[in-house]
Image 1 (cartoon, one colour):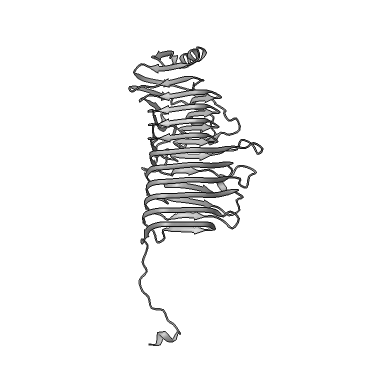
Image 2 (cartoon, rainbow, N blue to C red; image 1 turned 180 degrees about the vertical axis):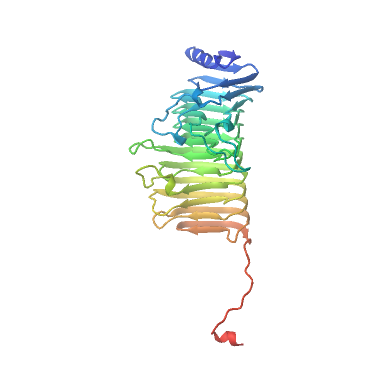
Length: 389
């Protein structure tokens, strides 16, 4: 393999371009900190960041390019990112070093303790954004304090993510861990996530009203999650199709919800009344300790989703503050939702709240919910004959 070791930030892009022209190779680093703006990865390149090396995102947003892939979508009104890659194949980011997005530098941190930092008026960069790429590997790397979404994969295929660590200041909002958007054949394993926003997100964001976008065949295995919002988020109401995905051997311990498929009006895109279809999603072998709901699937009245169906939860141990929520509507029923071998305690007066659900099945479910406000006895006046004795 061809290899170039760089020792200053200005040489990074030059080394990538040189190796790409030679057919590919590894860009490595001498020990140290490299402050940089946008880096463009290309086909057949391994960006190897060994222990003792830190890529540090520049604190000035003007040092980042606008990476308009896809051109029609700009979450948080920003197209900027630190590491960009489009229409490429065989790309790797490896090594036990660190990519640090310098996230808190992009916020007003002068807020009460525990509150989210205030967002700035200028755009915040994402850390990693790949568009329409094939054969992607992330291994061993630590991704720290992204100012925006940490990793947004759009329309990518054959993705392997193993033994990575994502850490985001939990007072930052919009610092999602990994957003898997319209991708197929993705495996994330043996990794840990701590974020202020969602740890893992499955999306199928439509770029226009005529094309079809599918997120499918995603496997997440043996990971730990800690979020102030959600451990796993499934879709938004204007998305296309999310199907055939599994999350197994997961520990969630955080202030947010464990699993969330929330579909409110405020998430609708312009001129859309809803479109998403979710099916064949399996959650198995979970431990959930949540300050909110461990599992929440809900749809607001008036939306026009195509389906939320065939979702199973198996082998769960739960300790949460709020009940499991399964809330459909008269127009959008949740279909074929199953629970098997579920144990735990809900610190509420109800273990499960369900409405408009077809084929809701329980097999070996043992949940205790016995927390609530007791009311003192007050005798009421009554005309009933029983009250005369």
